[in-house]
Every structure is written in C-alpha cells, then in structure tokens.
Amino acid sequence: MPNGFLGKILWVDLTNETFKEEELSEQIYRQYIGGYGLATKLIYENMPSKTDALSPESVFGFFPGLLTGTVAPLTGRFMVAGKSPLTNTWGDSNCGGYFGPEIKKCGYDAILIKGMADSPRYITILEDDKQFIDASDLWGLDVVQTEDKLKAKHGSVQIASIGQAGENLSLISGIVNDKARIAGRSGFGAVMGSKKLKAIVLKGARKIEVADKDALIQHTKDYNEGINAATAGGIEGYRTLGTTMGNEILFQIGDTPAKNWGGRKEDFPPERLSKISGIEIDKYKQKPYGCFSCPVRCGAIMKVPEVDLEETHRPEYETCASFGHLLLNDDLMSIFKANDLCNRAGIDTISAGATIAFAIECFENGLLTKDDTDGLELTWGNSETIITLLNKIINRDGIGDLLADGTKIAAEKLGKGSEYAMHSMGQELGMHSPKYYKNMGTTFAFDPTPGRHTTASLDFFAMGPIIKPNGLFEGITLPRKFKRPGEDRSEAEKLFTAISQFTNSLGLCGFVYVFQKYPLLELVKSVVGWDLDIAEAIKTGQRIQTLRQAFTLREGIDIIKNKIPERTVTVDYLEDYKGYCEKMGWNPETGYPFKETLKDLNLDFVVKDLF
Image (cartoon, rainbow, N blue to C red; front, side, top):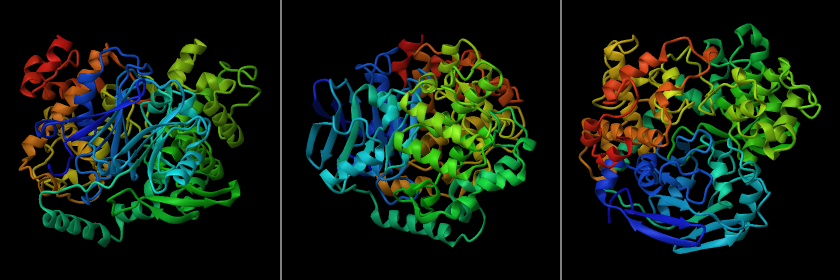
C-alpha cells in the first residue's frame, strides 16, 4: 500500500453506465503529484485535441491533492479539471470543503468522467458499492435542495452537484459541494450539465496510510500552534472576517475594480464603501466554517433575516467586489441575496457580477434598451434590478439568455459592446487590478487558464513571508530585485509559478502564502515518504505548468496574441511574459515550449503535438 495516495483512479462512463478502475505507478505521482498536476497528465493523454468541451467525448474530473485527506494543515483542496467550454483552453477550478478528502476515503486519487447520459443521472460511490441512479426528480432543483434530498436518502455523505445554471448549460456555471463551496471558474457546471450528471454522492471508509505518522502529527501541531497563537494581523483577520477583511482596504489602495473597471475612488466614497465592509457582514455570523484540515476556518455560516436567509454562507471578497464595487452597489442585503442565489444555482459570482456590469454599461451607452432588457432599467447601484437580472441569467429567461454565457459571448451575439466586456478569452477577470498588482496583467492574459487571480501571479502573492529569504518554504528565496522589470523579476516569476503548481497539486490552500512559514517538504516526506529537495519540487512545478500550457496550445489557442481590456492595465504585460517564457524554456515569441525543454521535463509525448 502506497503512502499518501491510493495508486488508483476511477473512470466513469455515463454513456455505457460503467465504472472502471485504473492503477497508476508511483512514478506518475512523483512527476505530477495530484490535483491538477495529475489531471493534466491523464486528460491530455485521454482526450483528443479540439474535442468539444460539451460533447460526450469530453473528459473532466475531480482531483484531490496529494496531501488531501491527511491532517497536514491547509490541504483540504481538490480540483475540477478538463477543457473549459468558456475559454476553450485548459480549465481547472479549485475548491475546498469536505468533498475532496471523501474521494480519497472512497479509495481513489481521482474520479474521471466521460460520455453522456441519455437522461438525468447521479452517481453514488458508497464504500465499495457504485451505482448510476435516475435523477429526474432532482433535475430543476438548486444545490441546497439537491443535497437535502440526497442526504435524506443516503445518510451522511459528501455531495458535489450542479444547480439550474449548470443544467441550463451556462458557460459561467460551476459545481458545488457543502451547499456553498463552488468550483466556480472555467464553466464546469455546464460540462456536468451537458453530460446530464446532476450529482456525485460519496461515502468512503478507506484510511489514508502515511509514511511517518509521528512526524506528520508533530509538523502539523507545530504549524497549527503558530496559527492559533496569532492574535493580530492577517491570520486573525482571516479567522474573524474571512476574505471580506479586504472589502474596504483593497478598494482604498486601488486593487478592487469599480464601475466595470472604469470607475474611480470617488464613484464609491467611504460612506458607501463602509456599508459593505467585512465588519458589517460579520454582524450576521452564526458560527465559523472551515475546510478539512484548516486551522484558520475563514468561512462562516450566516443568518440574514432581512432577506429571509435562515442559513447561508458568508460571501467572499470576490463576490462582494463583483456585486458591490463593480456595480457601485452598497446594498449589503442584495449582496447576501446574490451570493445565496449564485451558490444555490451553481454560478460563478465573479462572472455573474461582471456580466451584469457589462449589461449596465451597454444600457448606459444605448447598446441595450428596455426592449432588450425585458423592461428593466439597468443602472449602477440599482440593487433590486441587479437581483432580478441575476435570476434571469440563472434561468436563461429573456435578457438572461443573452448574458448566461458571460460577456464575450454576449458581446458577440449583440454584435457590439465588446469594449465593455472585461474578460480574457471569455473568462471574466478576477477582482484584483493589474494596475496595483502589476504581474496580474501577465497572469490574466497568458496563464493557460486565463483571467484568473488564483493562478501564479507573483505580485499578488508576494505580500507574505515568501518575500523573505526562506521565509515561507525552506530553500525558496526570490531574487533581490524581483519587483523591477528585468532578469531578477523573470526568474522570480518562474520560481513562483513552479512552486505554485507544486503546492496546488498537493492540495494546499492559496492562503498558505500569506500566513507563516510552512513545512512543505517535511510534510511531503512524512506523508508520502519521498526525500524531495526544493529543486525537484520546482522542476515538478515547471513540468505541470508546461503541460497545462501545451494543452492550451494544442487546442489551437495562439496565447501570445491574447490581450486584456486596456482599461484594466497600465504595464507592458507582454514584455513581462516574454522574460518569463525565456526562464521557463519556452519560445518568448510564441509561448511554445522548446523541444529541449519538453524532453528535459520528461514531456516527450507532447513534442509530436506541438511540432
């Protein structure tokens, strides 16, 4: 029995209603780790290029990290991965909660899904019993209703499901577990909906073996004691307010976009900004909520009687920004309501808010009229109309059908308004500004999953202990002049990208970068038994990023020519990217990895596809 991983994945064929187990070698795990690292290898080799993401031939899956399911701190994450129907690039979406560890408890390191059911189905994996079950009575329900019905039937289980947005094939829909933890980006709700798969229900009893239990417990105890001892600063802020601690300060420093990325601070003055602060939101908290193996617990269960929400999850910063600042909306109750609607329907809050901002600006400039909007007066800060329009998007009702696939497709259908569509290759930009975090422009434009703030954006994450020599992970030190354009910055971008792919594939939460020093290699050794050094970890991360890049290039995407909207950025992000490409061993004029790089990273199988 291997340590940390199970050595086995499950293939689910919805067309033929079959389950098939496949064993993987330890070498594959050492080269690709888990999470989207393992996903890139398996999906690249099992799904032909140019496959329609919403076709029966499309493959997508659920991939817990290598350390997910153990007590290692902050490792409760899993990835949904495959081809994005929104961008037609490599797609992945990071999610927390308790579903990821349950995949491991069921005995698998991944669940991959292909084919298409002829009518709604859900899958159960209840220890050793696996079934396809009719989901006709669940189709049309939101995810909360779905979870309640499935738990009433199957008992204490973990569930990932889609709501109405995924059923309606909205390209900005996601997959939800724990009633509100959503793998929201890349459009996988639509992929799941296209396959007529309503839910996956898991209950496992498998124990994850580890190489050195005593060492694992000691490293975990030491790290958690440091977290628990924090009484001020970032850790305490996250523990108390979660990501909403940034609702005011990030706008004040120029990070949070306003008025569809065209606003200024004066458009959302302090007296309005304070109405949607983390402190105001915290008044409705009933109890903290955290993902598996998390000592911080930055989530919260809320009760908001003003809008009849007896139990709902605290909105994240991104949700508050997209339905607040971006729309010049200071009505906190509408933000609670929008968050709950998006969670229940399984739709990405970033894209949903950004698409409404696009519609408002189109209306303001005469590109949409009341005849187009079902009589709605689309104006900034009109919270009642915002909620009405959101419901229409979720249900593809009237004007909602135009907007349900995001801003790029809406502008294409309109034949106008592309200047108001704040996206990258179809994916609405995360709520952090490249005008403040300079490297974010490069990330938004050129990462294999474009438009995402959670990918490896150097400046965004270089605000915690990683900026100090050996301050976050032993052996990782950023070059001294990494904040200035030039050789040091390009090297830092490469290093951070590589280590970020490695930590993501372990199942680590992105907030590890803003807390305290983390025993990275020590935990890998105590769980898996590998004597990794930091050089191998970096090379592994380069391999994963390069294969993600190769997938997007193989799809025919000329990534080097992508541009993000001018109003979102002030720096020359293309020159930044070219320097990064040189360090990664990629052609700086095309973004293609050189043959020598592919061979050095043991990616020889990619050469025939790119050359």
